[in-house]
Image (tube, one colour):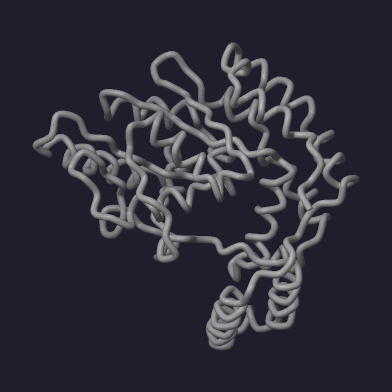
Length: 297
């Protein structure tokens, strides 16, 4: 989460897809959000609720095999697979369906990813637990998220490929992450535009205003009719705030950043070891060097 998956999905679907690429959406796949095509239901594979998802996947693969192109890529974009109960089953089942399986995940420095995660929760009406942009929300987020050594261990294997791509904070302006993804996968990513930009960044004061608004509206959530009106009012207010000129961004203090770095130090050391020779490439040297870099003003 918070490593560019929504941007990737939005941009890929901003133009008609070639016959060689399938991103399940619309009637082919149930979307939890109407504006972004993602596939979080993958984490259900191996459970009773996952049976209909497997049937959907089988139908998608069968349709792809009927296309008159030499090779078709089916791209499934899923967040938070760290909570999937049966990763081995998920890998095995997907591998049985296709000729080749590749898992790619983006790794973003935890201090930035967690801050972005909480800021996103502040803006989300469906996430009432994170009311204000506060450091204690970031600490709660460290419970299961962004332990990249665990991700690498859970999703590696001999019968498929696991690729890890680094996310840098300047990727939003240089488009570096999308370029690395396109270069590695061979999937062309359309250029960014205002129409396919998702998760608008907000300033700290704007986040505080949204958090305070959610807090005032919270008591209406338990009343069905009023809950719908409150949600509509909130989305309208959020849209107005998102269209404002962005104020100063919410940033961690040096002390807060050091605390996050320390929480993940052992995990990142194991992650570096799991990367093996990859960790000696320039991009990964830069990634590990920037973990403890001072926050940008």
